[in-house]
Image 1: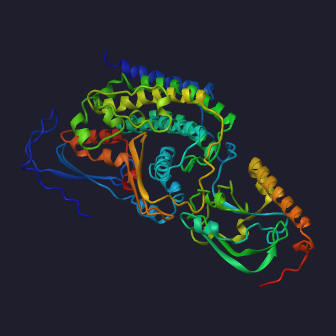
Image 2 (image 1 turned 90 degrees about the vertical axis):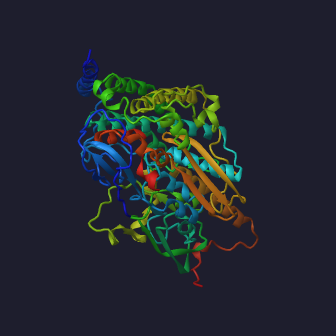
Image 3 (image 1 turned 90 degrees about the horizontal axis):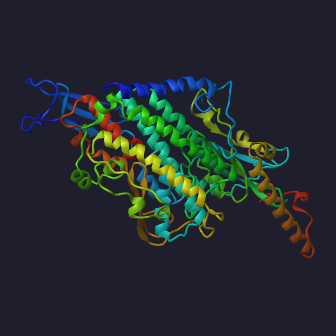
Length: 388
Length: 197
């Protein structure tokens, strides 16, 4: 893989507020793939003028595991545990997106209780993903450890819930076509309610810790601005798009699952900078807590899986389907083509963090190297999903 | 005033620090391995084979149908079917696995083998302290290492085991009734020496 950076004499220099104005050569720095702030094995070739980034080229593929080809060679059910390994922070939403596309492909109905459980687990996933993202982001800014430990303390409580329900903390493999695998016991629901009720206390603390903090404001405001036009044309989704002020949330737009039954608001940013992206996560956590409370109240009893769906020898009819959900990181979609056989003819993942990463250079140009870390942290990438 | 935000943040850390002495919610560290959190009942990591009774060979429920081998997504199961038959828990002569290997370095604990098994023969274990000094043979679990008694399964996941036991007892009862109803019923197959084919 050649990753050379051309010299940039022809390029117009963006205005900079700091750094050396001396004319000099560009310095190429290869950041990563083993770098504490790159959230996995991600490399950036950065051309620097002093401390200012003049060009940035992302290099990825270090964690490529052939996910899509494996998906085309195993049964439909066999791909379900592999989807856990895409974005290993949010295996529940990955399961849901995949189950949704297969259900669309084969026309499977999902019982009501299963849909509610899916909403509950997806929102719990959103809580723990956003909490740990904020921790990592502050870690990248130099708040070494403290916010991350607080975030992980809360995340661990939610992972305990996942473990006691599905058997595994992160590789849940919980959803099945036409429902869910294990029913939530009343004790589990009580415990989950308790954790959700305590969660706003953590959000309040996190808000106190970061929102008014001068260092956070200096490091994030007006850093990595994205305009709404750029975000829309690049296909950015999720909190990153909403930070630019574009009101687009698949929970409202598609209304998949039972989301139309819940009352919640979509937080919107204004400037599209790192600070807005950070605040999006904080506000979304509060909305998720609201959705969870409503879901716990409305949760009906009944079966959790459609008994008509066969576990073995599952063959959906010939056709194609694209199922998408609002994962914590953005629009997560699975595109499947079936030729009537036991495995998909084509299996394609639309990973949100990969597509959100495509505008990294646009966000970083003209900022310092230290800001690249913060901007990358605010994109919310997981390399398991970027490289697949 | 500049600095108030930082002071507010420091107040939060101070609250967490002091609170960690009084509030269990804030002090979550568990001193593993001296202290352990109890494992949830649904916890799973690697599969094992169940046998009834005391003899791991005679009581093994697996009939080497190879469904789990076929369905396993990372293909970590390897089975060789026996040539002869042995009676299963209902006394019916069945094949048994001559070789049953699970490569736990490949297994991804998805429990699809458990879901597809029609004989309740393979279940998920809870033993997670499996570190070894080398990564080849030591992580390849053979049939002897995999076979664990039903009592063990009852101990690690009591409510699932109760369900399975009830299901198998009902199946055995139905089979016995059918056999009794059939004219000129054969004596139970378990009593007959098993013919090899």
